[in-house]
Length: 434
Image (cartoon, rainbow, N blue to C red; front, side, top):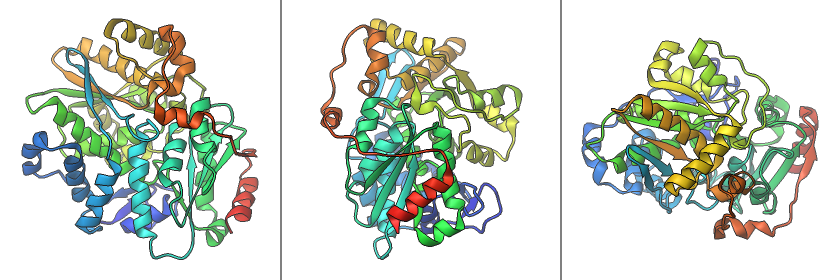
């Protein structure tokens, strides 16, 4: 398989080149030249497979030309060594819980798979690989823990000062070893811009071997398609008219679901559910894509004012807004609505949502009310205990801290503090990586 840039000005690359580079030389995001449907035989068997078997079948279809079967199988099975249950909340509405991994966030799946894939491609190289990642919360912790102590790989996590929860921050600032946390006096968009500039800087790339672990890297985004197949399989083969609501920030999660749909997964419609950073819902509504500075909300992982992966969605649909709107609807949720939803669902259904999952729940609930013929599930992206500052007041009680999170609570924060000036960041990388 060859991969092309969404900007269309770079030569096509191999899977290894795409994983090692992260971003294309022309600043675009890599996409496979083709996405072919899964075979009919797979869909006949899918409902009887377990999670690892399902994921391996999808991975083989997407990557089987480039990685030996035994190596790929080990990567997939090692990545998904925790459950991903579909939990019914009430009639026709369920949630796919993706927070049962090591850092209790959905990004464990993409980060763990990418760590194994990058290690596979870099196993015979002499030069250290430096993984750059911008985070508004859970990406940093998932990537840092996924790559922690991996030989030959160093991780640099950029995050906006004061804009991630204390527990999220502890998950990637207390590790040390090959993990460096950079606290930026700016927004997530500033962090993402600095990462992209790093990949475009020729001098820096001559001196330092760089790749990205954000969802701009195909190796991070692609494995997220696995769990959409698994969610549909758990609903059962007799379920029709499936709608999936996806809490969306940088739009990698939704993009991976749309890729699964292009592979003929029977999801009828997706909901791009956002907080008040509503750039994509506005585009769906009026056809104008207008990035703007992000606004801080209680669903902080979705505070993105210029979502990178929308370029992939445009590419996937041939830049046709009509085609996009045929598969996707937008939904916007305010902080007040998020808090109210968390409280109401806990009181009525005894189910505890995190702020991001609350956006997905409300979007799907409103959709199903208008479309009673449909059934759906939403993506629950992180454990609610990671957002106690918001969730506890909403339900008016304390949340126990799971063991996977409490182990970070007593750690000592270690960070480098930088401004949003790229030249300062560049010099920092050269000093610390060369």
